Length: 129
Image (cartoon, rainbow, N blue to C red; front, side):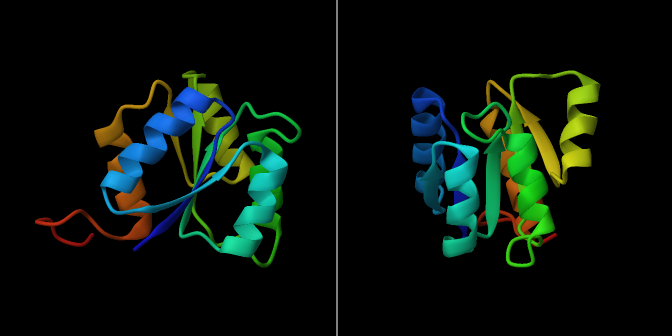
């Protein structure tokens, strides 16, 4: 079972996405801000991080930069989640160290495809990438 760290401060987004990921067999760990996301990434060693970019205490841009700079967490793939859909926002997320980028509201099939690609698998019935 793959472990995903969801760093999201919006309760409705967090609830909806975590339930959908759990139903698809992922283990989900939740952080409400960038600072606790960093701590959980180090202690829980997730297989992938879904990082909201607009977070309290420490925003997703800086949290991702710190994750990618740390020996213990730099290999963990990070997908930026943001309501900002401009090309420059995507470029900014990738420059911060994110491995991929997705916009809100979340379109689940698209996000699952990105998760599966970064984890190197597809759901049952498919073939590995």
